[in-house]
Every structure is written in structure tokens, then in C-alpha cells.
Length: 170
Image (cartoon, rainbow, N blue to C red; front, side, top):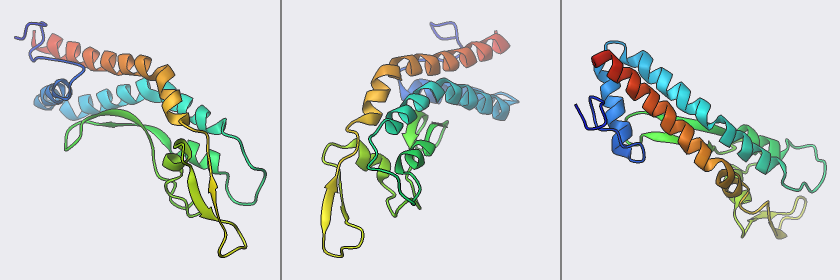
């Protein structure tokens, strides 16, 4: 029994703590269901952070109406909480996934976030390039405000599962 009263050592702020929790869950008879529940609780904890990031991209200025799908709303749809337990990477994060078929601009989340912007051809002119700027650091600013609360909520979900496992053993 570890010093914290759990059957394993849990350091929430390390990858080893999450790995130890995942190993303990696998050892249980209903480990698959417990992993699903832990992942679900961790995703739920990150939903407010994802909503804040979506709000950040939606507040980016628009050049005007067009017939193509909206860039801001397309990027906002691709922002989701992601949880992986086991494998090469374990953890929880809010991720802006690539926008594959939107204006042939798969890296829109990354490019709209950076200060240097992105270059593209002007429609109808084969040799005219322009640099366009999005809302600088929209994702980073959104995470600054809700990041600590999201981390705390994920840690709470992990420690709740650890206590639940400890109560089964002890």
C-alpha cells in the first residue's frame, strides 16, 4: 500500500501517475468499463475548455459573407477534448483537429492562431499572393483562462477513479 492510502502511487501531475492508474484499472475484472468511464469523465472535465476555445475562434473578425463554408465555424467544429489511456501517449487535452475539406486549408486551426498568418493565392489571379492574419493566439488565450480549472477537473476525475479502485481492494 502506498503512502497516499491507495494500492499504487498516484502523482496526478505526471504521466507515470496516469499510467499507474491505467494499469490498476486493467487489473480489475471490469477494467474495460472502468477505463471507458474514466475517459468519459476526463472528456467531460475538458468540455468547458473546448467551449472557450470555440468561442475564441468564433470571435475572429470575418472579411464578409461568401459561398464557401465558414472558416471560423469549420475550425470550431473541429475543436474537441481528447483522452487517451495507454499506448505511446497517455493524457487529456483539448485539440483543434485539421479541417480536411474546407477551402483546401487543412491547417486552418494552426495558421489562424499564429502571428505571422498564412499566405494564399487571390481568387481569380494566378500570380497574386497575399498574407492573411487571423486572430492571434485565439486558442492560447482561451486556454489561459480555463486551463487551471480544466486541469483540476481532470485531476479530480483521476483521483475519484483511484479512490474507487482503492475502496474495492481495501
